[in-house]
Amino acid sequence: MFSSPPDAFYVYIQCHKCGEKLKVRINTLSEVSQSDKGAYFVQKEAMGTQCFCRMPFRLELDRFRNIKNKEITGGKFITEKEYRSDNKE
Image (cartoon, rainbow, N blue to C red):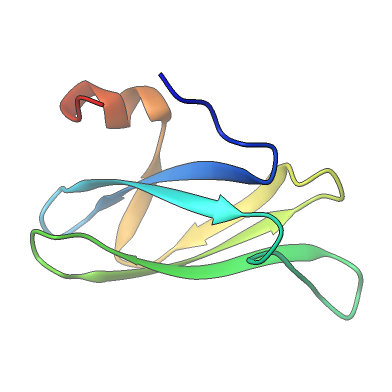
């Protein structure tokens, strides 16, 4: 099993339309932005291969890059365990 490199982490999402589960890599060096108020965030869009439904999401992070808040449209966040229950890696 592979772990996340120190400059990245993964989020797991599931499409509301078809149920496809996705593992999305977040590169903390190139995909994390800082707002005018000093908060860190990621805005990204995921799309699977079954129904091609776009799932835009936003993560709000603390200064240690831990997720404080998350929002998604067209899907839901799931745990790594839920993702692995159907996907054999």
